[in-house]
Image (cartoon, rainbow, N blue to C red; front, side, top):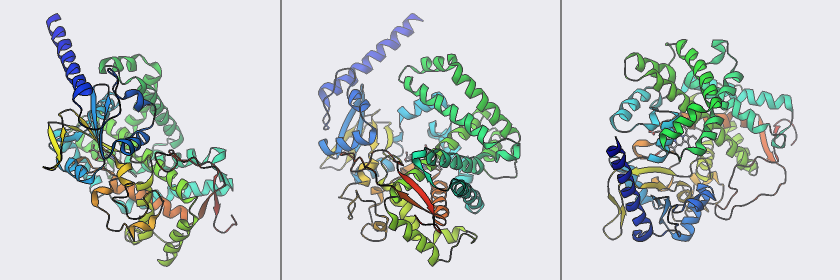
Length: 482
Ligand code: HEM
C-alpha cells in the first residue's frame, strides 16, 4: 500500500518536473512571461478567454502558447493548422480539461466519451441528430416564439431595463427544447415552470461547485457528496427525470425515447440516459438563449437588417398566417446570412474549440514545423479567426449579414467554424440552426427591436462589447409606432 502510494507520488513529481522544465526552459512558441508554479494562470484568471486569446494573437502572433500551471495550451489562429487538427481524428480528441470537469457532474455522458464508446453512442444519437425530424419541430418552435410575443403584447413595452427580456426569453427557449428533446411536461400534468426552476437550481449548484474543480477528482466528489444543497437539487431533478423516463411515449421519436430504447437493448445504462438528457437539454437551451440574446443585441442597433428580413418574408409571401415548411424556411437566404453573421461575430457563442493531443505531432509544413507534445491542449481560436482580415474581405469587426452574399460569399471553409469541426463537430448543429432561424423569423413577423441611446463600452481587444448587452433594448409591435 505505502509502496504503491510512494510510486504514484514519485510519478506525479517526475511528471510535474518534466512539464516545468518545458515551461521554464524549453518553450519555443511565443508566450507571455510565466511564473514557476502557476504558469500563466493568474493572467488567464484576470480576463475572459475571448480577451486572453485576442490579446495573445495581437501581442504574440498567429501561434502562441499559454501555460495553465504545468499544462501547455497551444493556440492556433491559422486555418491550415485548424484543418490539420480537425482532420487528424486519431491524434486530436475532445480536450481533457473540459471532459474531466464534465465527468464529475455528468459521468458517461456522450460528450465525455472517446474511442469506441463515443462511436457507439454517436450511432445511437444519429437516429435523431443526423436527420432531425425538422418538420415536426417547426410548430413547437413557432408556438414557443408566439408565447414570447404574447407576453410582450400584454406587457406592451418590454425593455430589458425591467430585467424581464432575458429571463422570459430564457424560459421560452428552455420549454421549446424540453418539448423537442425530452417531453411535453403538460402531458405529465407537471408545470413547465416547476421543472424549469428545479433545472436552473441544479445548474446554479453545478456552477458554484465548478469553483473547486481544480481539486483532485475524489475530493471534488467528496465535496459534492457532503454538499446538502447540491444533493437535494440533484435528487429532485432525478425524481422528475425518472417520472419522465417511466412515462415516456415510445411512439414519439425524440432524444429521450431513442436513448431509452438503447437502454432497453443494453447498449447504455439508465444513468447514461439521464446524464445525456440533462446535458443535451442544458447545452441546447443555453446556446439557444445566448444566440437570441446576441440577436437582440446586434439588430437593435441595425434596424435595416430587420427591415431586410421582413422584406424577404414578404417577397416569398410568408405571412403570420402561413404554414411554415422546411422548404419555405430554406428559401430565406438573407435570414440565413443574419444567423450566420451572429454566430461569426459574437464574442461568446463560440470563442474557441479545444482538443487534446493523444501523441506527439507536428502541425504546419516542412518549412515551418510546429511541434505539439502528447498531452498538450490545442485551442482553435474561433473568435480570432472569425475576425481575421486575412480571411474576411469585408471589415470583420462590422456586423454585416450581407457579407455572406457578397464579399465573403466564398470564404475559406476553416475560417468559419461556429460549430467546431472534424469528428467532434457539434452534433446539434442542424437543430440549433433551425431553432435559431425559426425563432428569429417568427419574432420578425410581429415586432421590431430597438435600442435607446446608451453608451456602448467597446472592449479594445475584441473591437466590440465583450458581453451581450440588452440595456436600453425594447420591442414594439409593427403596427404601432416606435
Ligand atoms: C447555435 C447553436 C450551437 C452552437 C453554436 C454550438 C456549438 C458547438 C461547438 C463549437 C461544439 C464543439 C465542437 C468541436 O469540438 O469541434 C459543440 C459540441 C456539441 N454540441 Fe453544440 N452548438 C449549438 C447547439 C447545440 C444543440 C442544439 C445541441 C443539442 C441538442 C448541441 C449539442 C452538442 C454536443 C452534445 C456537443 C459535443 C459533441 C461531441 O463531443 O462529439 N449543440 N457545439
